Image (cartoon, rainbow, N blue to C red; front, side, top):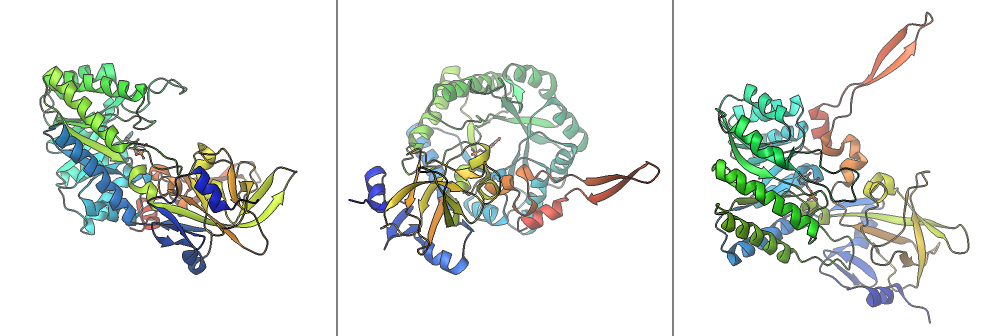
Length: 463
Ligand SMILES: Cc1ncc(COP(=O)(O)O)c(C=O)c1O
Protein backbone atom coordinates (compact mmCIF):
# COMPACT_ATOMS: atom_id res chain seq x y z
CA UNK A 1 0.00 0.00 0.00
CA UNK A 2 1.32 3.41 -0.91
CA UNK A 3 1.45 5.96 1.85
CA UNK A 4 0.49 9.57 1.22
CA UNK A 5 2.74 12.45 2.22
CA UNK A 6 0.08 13.63 4.72
CA UNK A 7 0.12 10.18 6.37
CA UNK A 8 3.90 10.25 6.63
CA UNK A 9 3.69 13.58 8.43
CA UNK A 10 0.95 12.29 10.74
CA UNK A 11 3.13 9.33 11.67
CA UNK A 12 6.37 11.20 12.22
CA UNK A 13 5.58 14.72 13.40
CA UNK A 14 3.25 16.77 15.54
CA UNK A 15 0.93 18.18 12.93
CA UNK A 16 -0.98 20.50 12.62
CA UNK A 17 0.92 23.03 14.71
CA UNK A 18 0.04 26.52 15.86
CA UNK A 19 1.51 27.97 12.65
CA UNK A 20 0.87 25.22 10.08
CA UNK A 21 -2.22 23.37 8.93
CA UNK A 22 -3.55 22.02 5.65
CA UNK A 23 -6.83 22.52 3.87
CA UNK A 24 -7.67 20.40 0.85
CA UNK A 25 -4.06 19.18 0.76
CA UNK A 26 -2.54 22.65 0.59
CA UNK A 27 -0.41 24.17 3.32
CA UNK A 28 -1.33 27.25 5.36
CA UNK A 29 1.26 29.23 7.35
CA UNK A 30 -0.22 31.43 10.10
CA UNK A 31 -3.50 30.93 8.23
CA UNK A 32 -2.00 32.41 5.05
CA UNK A 33 -3.22 30.37 2.04
CA UNK A 34 0.18 29.79 0.47
CA UNK A 35 -1.12 28.32 -2.79
CA UNK A 36 -3.25 31.39 -3.37
CA UNK A 37 -0.23 33.58 -2.66
CA UNK A 38 1.83 31.59 -5.18
CA UNK A 39 -0.93 31.79 -7.77
CA UNK A 40 -0.93 35.56 -7.40
CA UNK A 41 2.79 36.33 -6.99
CA UNK A 42 4.60 33.31 -8.47
CA UNK A 43 7.83 31.71 -7.27
CA UNK A 44 10.54 32.06 -6.13
CA UNK A 45 9.05 34.26 -3.45
CA UNK A 46 10.05 35.72 -0.10
CA UNK A 47 7.35 36.35 2.51
CA UNK A 48 7.56 38.55 5.60
CA UNK A 49 4.56 38.07 7.87
CA UNK A 50 4.74 41.16 10.07
CA UNK A 51 2.32 40.29 12.94
CA UNK A 52 4.63 37.45 13.99
CA UNK A 53 7.29 40.02 14.95
CA UNK A 54 5.07 41.74 17.50
CA UNK A 55 3.71 38.41 18.67
CA UNK A 56 7.16 37.07 19.53
CA UNK A 57 8.22 40.27 21.26
CA UNK A 58 5.15 40.06 23.45
CA UNK A 59 5.65 36.37 24.16
CA UNK A 60 9.12 37.10 25.51
CA UNK A 61 7.90 40.06 27.54
CA UNK A 62 5.24 37.84 29.11
CA UNK A 63 7.78 35.13 30.02
CA UNK A 64 9.95 37.69 31.76
CA UNK A 65 6.97 39.30 33.46
CA UNK A 66 5.85 35.96 34.83
CA UNK A 67 9.34 35.01 35.95
CA UNK A 68 9.78 38.41 37.65
CA UNK A 69 6.52 37.92 39.54
CA UNK A 70 7.37 34.36 40.49
CA UNK A 71 10.77 35.32 41.90
CA UNK A 72 9.69 38.67 43.28
CA UNK A 73 12.27 40.32 41.06
CA UNK A 74 12.19 44.02 41.75
CA UNK A 75 13.91 45.46 38.70
CA UNK A 76 12.96 46.13 35.09
CA UNK A 77 13.13 43.93 31.97
CA UNK A 78 13.98 45.55 28.62
CA UNK A 79 13.51 43.86 25.26
CA UNK A 80 15.98 45.16 22.68
CA UNK A 81 15.75 44.27 19.03
CA UNK A 82 19.11 43.29 17.56
CA UNK A 83 18.89 45.09 14.23
CA UNK A 84 21.57 43.08 12.44
CA UNK A 85 19.22 40.12 12.16
CA UNK A 86 17.10 42.13 9.72
CA UNK A 87 17.55 45.86 9.12
CA UNK A 88 14.53 46.37 6.89
CA UNK A 89 12.41 49.42 7.67
CA UNK A 90 9.25 47.29 7.84
CA UNK A 91 10.84 45.06 10.51
CA UNK A 92 12.03 47.95 12.67
CA UNK A 93 8.71 49.75 12.33
CA UNK A 94 6.75 46.68 13.35
CA UNK A 95 9.09 45.90 16.26
CA UNK A 96 8.94 49.50 17.49
CA UNK A 97 5.17 49.26 17.96
CA UNK A 98 5.94 47.28 21.13
CA UNK A 99 7.92 49.65 23.39
CA UNK A 100 11.32 48.15 22.82
CA UNK A 101 14.90 49.36 22.77
CA UNK A 102 17.29 48.86 19.87
CA UNK A 103 20.67 47.19 19.72
CA UNK A 104 23.02 48.28 16.93
CA UNK A 105 26.23 46.80 15.62
CA UNK A 106 27.83 49.18 13.13
CA UNK A 107 28.09 52.76 11.89
CA UNK A 108 25.28 52.67 9.33
CA UNK A 109 22.92 51.38 12.01
CA UNK A 110 23.16 54.84 13.55
CA UNK A 111 21.91 56.33 10.28
CA UNK A 112 18.90 54.05 10.63
CA UNK A 113 18.29 55.38 14.15
CA UNK A 114 18.47 58.92 12.77
CA UNK A 115 16.12 58.08 9.91
CA UNK A 116 13.53 56.48 12.20
CA UNK A 117 13.75 59.49 14.51
CA UNK A 118 13.25 61.86 11.57
CA UNK A 119 10.20 59.85 10.56
CA UNK A 120 8.77 60.33 14.06
CA UNK A 121 8.97 56.64 15.00
CA UNK A 122 10.45 57.61 18.38
CA UNK A 123 11.79 60.59 20.27
CA UNK A 124 15.20 61.41 21.67
CA UNK A 125 14.54 59.22 24.69
CA UNK A 126 14.83 56.02 22.60
CA UNK A 127 17.27 53.62 24.21
CA UNK A 128 19.97 52.40 21.84
CA UNK A 129 22.56 49.85 22.94
CA UNK A 130 25.56 50.31 20.63
CA UNK A 131 27.40 47.05 20.39
CA UNK A 132 30.17 45.69 18.20
CA UNK A 133 33.72 46.71 17.46
CA UNK A 134 33.55 50.45 16.81
CA UNK A 135 35.25 52.14 13.89
CA UNK A 136 35.88 55.90 14.03
CA UNK A 137 32.82 56.40 11.87
CA UNK A 138 30.64 54.42 14.28
CA UNK A 139 32.08 56.25 17.30
CA UNK A 140 31.54 59.63 15.65
CA UNK A 141 27.92 58.81 14.91
CA UNK A 142 27.33 57.64 18.48
CA UNK A 143 28.87 60.88 19.77
CA UNK A 144 26.79 62.97 17.37
CA UNK A 145 23.54 61.46 18.62
CA UNK A 146 24.53 61.97 22.26
CA UNK A 147 25.64 65.55 21.56
CA UNK A 148 22.39 66.08 19.72
CA UNK A 149 20.38 65.32 22.86
CA UNK A 150 19.54 61.62 22.49
CA UNK A 151 19.34 60.72 26.17
CA UNK A 152 19.73 56.95 26.22
CA UNK A 153 22.46 55.98 23.81
CA UNK A 154 24.60 53.40 25.57
CA UNK A 155 27.86 52.48 23.84
CA UNK A 156 29.01 49.07 25.00
CA UNK A 157 32.78 49.26 25.28
CA UNK A 158 34.33 46.49 23.25
CA UNK A 159 37.97 47.59 23.63
CA UNK A 160 39.92 50.20 25.56
CA UNK A 161 40.34 52.64 22.71
CA UNK A 162 36.61 53.24 22.33
CA UNK A 163 36.14 55.06 25.60
CA UNK A 164 39.11 57.34 24.91
CA UNK A 165 37.64 58.31 21.56
CA UNK A 166 34.15 58.88 22.99
CA UNK A 167 35.59 60.99 25.79
CA UNK A 168 37.21 63.29 23.24
CA UNK A 169 34.08 63.77 21.19
CA UNK A 170 31.16 63.83 23.65
CA UNK A 171 30.45 67.15 25.34
CA UNK A 172 28.32 66.03 28.28
CA UNK A 173 27.85 63.06 30.58
CA UNK A 174 26.99 59.71 29.04
CA UNK A 175 26.26 56.11 30.03
CA UNK A 176 28.37 53.19 28.93
CA UNK A 177 28.37 49.43 29.20
CA UNK A 178 31.21 46.92 29.06
CA UNK A 179 31.05 43.71 27.09
CA UNK A 180 32.58 40.65 28.68
CA UNK A 181 34.54 38.55 26.22
CA UNK A 182 32.93 35.19 26.83
CA UNK A 183 34.82 31.97 26.67
CA UNK A 184 33.71 29.87 23.75
CA UNK A 185 32.41 26.34 23.80
CA UNK A 186 35.24 23.79 23.69
CA UNK A 187 34.40 22.81 20.09
CA UNK A 188 35.47 26.26 18.83
CA UNK A 189 38.87 26.86 17.31
CA UNK A 190 39.59 29.65 19.75
CA UNK A 191 39.12 30.01 23.45
CA UNK A 192 37.95 33.56 24.09
CA UNK A 193 35.60 35.62 21.95
CA UNK A 194 37.28 38.46 20.06
CA UNK A 195 34.39 40.69 21.12
CA UNK A 196 34.56 42.43 24.46
CA UNK A 197 37.03 42.63 27.33
CA UNK A 198 38.32 39.57 29.19
CA UNK A 199 36.69 38.62 32.53
CA UNK A 200 39.86 39.29 34.49
CA UNK A 201 40.44 42.71 32.97
CA UNK A 202 37.08 44.28 33.70
CA UNK A 203 37.55 45.27 37.34
CA UNK A 204 41.05 46.74 36.78
CA UNK A 205 39.76 48.59 33.71
CA UNK A 206 36.88 50.04 35.68
CA UNK A 207 39.17 51.14 38.51
CA UNK A 208 41.79 52.70 36.26
CA UNK A 209 39.68 54.30 33.55
CA UNK A 210 36.03 54.63 34.51
CA UNK A 211 35.72 55.11 38.28
CA UNK A 212 37.10 58.66 38.16
CA UNK A 213 35.92 59.47 34.66
CA UNK A 214 34.47 63.00 34.55
CA UNK A 215 31.70 62.19 32.09
CA UNK A 216 31.20 58.46 31.56
CA UNK A 217 29.01 56.46 33.92
CA UNK A 218 29.12 52.69 33.82
CA UNK A 219 25.57 51.41 33.67
CA UNK A 220 25.60 48.00 32.07
CA UNK A 221 27.52 44.78 31.98
CA UNK A 222 26.96 42.89 28.76
CA UNK A 223 27.57 39.31 27.85
CA UNK A 224 26.54 37.23 24.89
CA UNK A 225 26.97 33.55 24.35
CA UNK A 226 27.52 32.84 20.72
CA UNK A 227 25.87 29.44 20.83
CA UNK A 228 22.65 30.85 22.26
CA UNK A 229 20.62 30.51 25.43
CA UNK A 230 20.61 26.79 26.05
CA UNK A 231 20.03 24.55 29.02
CA UNK A 232 23.61 23.30 29.02
CA UNK A 233 26.33 23.21 31.64
CA UNK A 234 28.36 25.53 29.41
CA UNK A 235 25.65 28.20 29.33
CA UNK A 236 24.97 28.14 33.08
CA UNK A 237 28.67 28.21 33.80
CA UNK A 238 29.19 31.29 31.60
CA UNK A 239 26.21 33.00 33.22
CA UNK A 240 27.64 32.24 36.62
CA UNK A 241 31.04 33.68 35.66
CA UNK A 242 29.33 36.79 34.37
CA UNK A 243 27.34 37.16 37.59
CA UNK A 244 30.54 36.95 39.59
CA UNK A 245 31.94 39.88 37.62
CA UNK A 246 28.66 41.75 38.02
CA UNK A 247 28.64 41.34 41.80
CA UNK A 248 32.28 42.36 42.15
CA UNK A 249 31.69 45.36 39.95
CA UNK A 250 28.52 46.39 41.72
CA UNK A 251 30.38 46.47 45.04
CA UNK A 252 32.84 49.08 43.77
CA UNK A 253 30.59 50.73 41.18
CA UNK A 254 27.13 51.18 42.66
CA UNK A 255 25.99 53.05 39.55
CA UNK A 256 26.05 49.78 37.52
CA UNK A 257 22.44 48.70 37.51
CA UNK A 258 21.87 46.58 34.39
CA UNK A 259 22.86 43.20 33.07
CA UNK A 260 22.48 42.56 29.35
CA UNK A 261 22.38 38.86 28.54
CA UNK A 262 22.46 39.38 24.76
CA UNK A 263 20.52 37.43 22.16
CA UNK A 264 20.34 33.77 21.38
CA UNK A 265 16.79 32.59 21.96
CA UNK A 266 16.33 29.71 19.53
CA UNK A 267 13.54 29.51 16.98
CA UNK A 268 11.77 26.56 15.44
CA UNK A 269 14.01 24.88 12.89
CA UNK A 270 12.02 21.66 12.91
CA UNK A 271 8.44 20.64 13.59
CA UNK A 272 9.71 18.58 16.51
CA UNK A 273 11.28 21.66 18.09
CA UNK A 274 11.10 21.36 21.81
CA UNK A 275 12.34 24.29 23.90
CA UNK A 276 10.76 25.47 27.09
CA UNK A 277 11.16 29.24 26.92
CA UNK A 278 9.33 29.92 30.17
CA UNK A 279 11.54 27.44 32.03
CA UNK A 280 14.71 29.02 30.64
CA UNK A 281 13.59 32.54 31.50
CA UNK A 282 12.53 31.41 34.98
CA UNK A 283 15.86 29.76 35.53
CA UNK A 284 17.87 32.77 34.33
CA UNK A 285 15.87 35.17 36.49
CA UNK A 286 16.06 32.90 39.52
CA UNK A 287 19.83 32.38 39.17
CA UNK A 288 20.47 36.10 38.88
CA UNK A 289 18.24 36.81 41.86
CA UNK A 290 19.78 34.08 44.00
CA UNK A 291 23.32 35.03 43.16
CA UNK A 292 22.77 38.70 43.95
CA UNK A 293 21.10 37.85 47.26
CA UNK A 294 24.01 35.65 48.26
CA UNK A 295 26.47 38.37 47.34
CA UNK A 296 24.42 41.04 49.07
CA UNK A 297 24.13 43.22 45.98
CA UNK A 298 21.01 44.68 44.39
CA UNK A 299 19.66 42.66 41.49
CA UNK A 300 20.17 44.27 38.07
CA UNK A 301 17.71 45.39 35.42
CA UNK A 302 17.78 42.67 32.79
CA UNK A 303 18.18 43.36 29.08
CA UNK A 304 17.98 40.94 26.17
CA UNK A 305 18.84 41.51 22.51
CA UNK A 306 16.91 38.94 20.54
CA UNK A 307 17.46 38.98 16.80
CA UNK A 308 16.44 35.62 15.35
CA UNK A 309 13.69 35.27 17.89
CA UNK A 310 12.21 38.65 16.95
CA UNK A 311 12.16 38.27 13.21
CA UNK A 312 13.11 34.70 12.23
CA UNK A 313 9.67 33.17 12.48
CA UNK A 314 8.11 35.92 10.33
CA UNK A 315 9.87 34.81 7.16
CA UNK A 316 9.36 32.13 4.54
CA UNK A 317 10.87 31.31 1.14
CA UNK A 318 8.71 29.61 -1.46
CA UNK A 319 10.01 27.74 -4.50
CA UNK A 320 8.72 25.54 -7.28
CA UNK A 321 10.34 22.20 -8.01
CA UNK A 322 10.90 22.67 -11.72
CA UNK A 323 12.51 19.41 -12.65
CA UNK A 324 13.80 16.11 -11.34
CA UNK A 325 17.12 14.53 -12.25
CA UNK A 326 17.77 10.93 -11.35
CA UNK A 327 21.56 10.65 -11.15
CA UNK A 328 21.71 6.96 -10.12
CA UNK A 329 19.28 4.32 -8.78
CA UNK A 330 18.98 6.03 -5.44
CA UNK A 331 19.65 9.73 -5.89
CA UNK A 332 16.89 11.89 -7.22
CA UNK A 333 17.52 15.61 -7.41
CA UNK A 334 14.56 17.95 -7.28
CA UNK A 335 15.70 21.21 -8.82
CA UNK A 336 14.16 24.37 -7.36
CA UNK A 337 13.60 27.56 -9.34
CA UNK A 338 16.17 29.50 -7.31
CA UNK A 339 19.30 28.91 -5.27
CA UNK A 340 19.91 27.99 -1.64
CA UNK A 341 23.26 29.69 -1.66
CA UNK A 342 21.79 33.01 -2.70
CA UNK A 343 18.47 33.01 -0.86
CA UNK A 344 19.18 30.89 2.25
CA UNK A 345 22.95 31.23 2.63
CA UNK A 346 23.02 29.74 6.13
CA UNK A 347 22.02 26.36 4.69
CA UNK A 348 25.35 26.32 2.90
CA UNK A 349 27.58 28.41 5.15
CA UNK A 350 26.77 26.91 8.54
CA UNK A 351 24.64 23.89 7.56
CA UNK A 352 21.57 25.44 9.13
CA UNK A 353 18.25 23.66 8.91
CA UNK A 354 14.90 25.28 8.42
CA UNK A 355 11.44 23.81 8.49
CA UNK A 356 10.78 22.58 4.94
CA UNK A 357 7.35 21.44 3.78
CA UNK A 358 5.54 20.97 0.50
CA UNK A 359 2.87 23.57 -0.12
CA UNK A 360 0.57 21.44 -2.24
CA UNK A 361 -0.14 17.82 -3.12
CA UNK A 362 -0.22 16.51 0.47
CA UNK A 363 -2.51 13.67 -0.65
CA UNK A 364 0.09 12.31 -3.10
CA UNK A 365 2.57 9.56 -2.38
CA UNK A 366 6.05 10.61 -1.40
CA UNK A 367 9.65 9.89 -2.28
CA UNK A 368 13.05 10.63 -0.87
CA UNK A 369 14.93 13.38 -2.72
CA UNK A 370 17.80 15.81 -2.60
CA UNK A 371 17.07 19.45 -3.30
CA UNK A 372 19.30 21.26 -5.75
CA UNK A 373 19.71 24.98 -6.41
CA UNK A 374 20.20 26.56 -9.81
CA UNK A 375 23.73 27.89 -9.44
CA UNK A 376 26.44 25.70 -10.86
CA UNK A 377 28.06 25.41 -7.44
CA UNK A 378 28.09 21.84 -6.19
CA UNK A 379 27.41 23.09 -2.65
CA UNK A 380 24.13 24.69 -3.66
CA UNK A 381 21.89 21.96 -2.26
CA UNK A 382 19.76 21.04 0.76
CA UNK A 383 19.81 17.51 1.93
CA UNK A 384 18.30 16.74 5.27
CA UNK A 385 15.63 17.72 7.68
CA UNK A 386 16.59 17.92 11.31
CA UNK A 387 14.07 15.30 12.35
CA UNK A 388 14.68 12.70 9.66
CA UNK A 389 18.14 13.12 8.15
CA UNK A 390 16.50 12.98 4.76
CA UNK A 391 14.01 14.90 2.69
CA UNK A 392 10.67 13.46 1.71
CA UNK A 393 8.35 15.21 -0.71
CA UNK A 394 5.34 14.31 -2.83
CA UNK A 395 6.45 12.37 -5.91
CA UNK A 396 7.66 14.62 -8.71
CA UNK A 397 5.40 14.86 -11.73
CA UNK A 398 5.84 16.78 -14.98
CA UNK A 399 2.16 17.56 -15.10
CA UNK A 400 1.35 18.43 -11.48
CA UNK A 401 3.58 21.32 -10.28
CA UNK A 402 5.06 20.92 -6.83
CA UNK A 403 5.78 23.88 -4.58
CA UNK A 404 7.84 23.82 -1.41
CA UNK A 405 8.42 26.28 1.40
CA UNK A 406 11.27 26.94 3.80
CA UNK A 407 9.92 28.52 6.96
CA UNK A 408 11.22 30.73 9.76
CA UNK A 409 13.82 32.19 7.46
CA UNK A 410 13.33 35.84 8.47
CA UNK A 411 16.66 36.45 10.24
CA UNK A 412 20.10 37.08 8.73
CA UNK A 413 19.45 35.44 5.33
CA UNK A 414 18.97 38.68 3.40
CA UNK A 415 21.97 40.53 4.73
CA UNK A 416 24.26 37.52 4.41
CA UNK A 417 23.15 36.85 0.86
CA UNK A 418 23.60 40.53 -0.04
CA UNK A 419 19.94 41.43 -0.70
CA UNK A 420 20.01 44.22 -3.30
CA UNK A 421 23.54 45.14 -2.18
CA UNK A 422 23.07 45.06 1.61
CA UNK A 423 25.72 43.27 3.66
CA UNK A 424 26.00 41.64 7.08
CA UNK A 425 25.99 44.26 9.84
CA UNK A 426 25.62 46.81 7.02
CA UNK A 427 29.31 46.66 6.23
CA UNK A 428 29.65 48.95 3.22
CA UNK A 429 30.94 47.54 0.01
CA UNK A 430 34.46 48.98 -0.32
CA UNK A 431 35.66 51.24 -3.11
CA UNK A 432 36.64 49.12 -6.11
CA UNK A 433 39.43 50.21 -8.43
CA UNK A 434 40.69 48.80 -11.70
CA UNK A 435 44.40 48.66 -12.36
CA UNK A 436 45.77 48.47 -15.86
CA UNK A 437 49.06 49.24 -17.54
CA UNK A 438 49.72 51.78 -20.29
CA UNK A 439 52.04 51.24 -23.23
CA UNK A 440 55.03 52.47 -21.20
CA UNK A 441 54.33 49.98 -18.46
CA UNK A 442 52.98 52.57 -15.96
CA UNK A 443 50.04 51.65 -13.78
CA UNK A 444 46.72 53.31 -14.57
CA UNK A 445 44.16 53.47 -11.78
CA UNK A 446 40.46 53.89 -12.37
CA UNK A 447 37.68 53.92 -9.83
CA UNK A 448 35.11 51.39 -10.91
CA UNK A 449 32.76 52.01 -7.96
CA UNK A 450 32.88 54.16 -4.84
CA UNK A 451 32.40 52.81 -1.34
CA UNK A 452 28.75 52.28 -0.44
CA UNK A 453 27.39 55.28 1.45
CA UNK A 454 24.75 55.16 4.21
CA UNK A 455 22.10 56.64 1.91
CA UNK A 456 22.67 53.86 -0.66
CA UNK A 457 22.22 51.20 1.99
CA UNK A 458 19.24 52.81 3.71
CA UNK A 459 17.44 53.10 0.40
CA UNK A 460 17.85 49.37 -0.21
CA UNK A 461 16.31 48.70 3.19
CA UNK A 462 13.24 50.86 2.64
CA UNK A 463 14.20 53.99 4.61
C1 LIG B 1 25.88 41.14 20.82
C2 LIG B 1 24.79 40.39 20.16
N1 LIG B 1 23.54 40.53 20.63
C3 LIG B 1 22.51 39.88 20.05
C4 LIG B 1 22.70 39.04 18.98
C5 LIG B 1 21.50 38.36 18.38
O1 LIG B 1 21.56 37.00 18.45
P1 LIG B 1 20.28 36.15 18.02
O2 LIG B 1 19.93 36.55 16.65
O3 LIG B 1 20.76 34.75 18.13
O4 LIG B 1 19.20 36.46 19.01
C6 LIG B 1 23.99 38.86 18.46
C7 LIG B 1 24.21 37.97 17.33
O5 LIG B 1 25.27 37.70 16.85
C8 LIG B 1 25.07 39.55 19.07
O6 LIG B 1 26.31 39.42 18.62
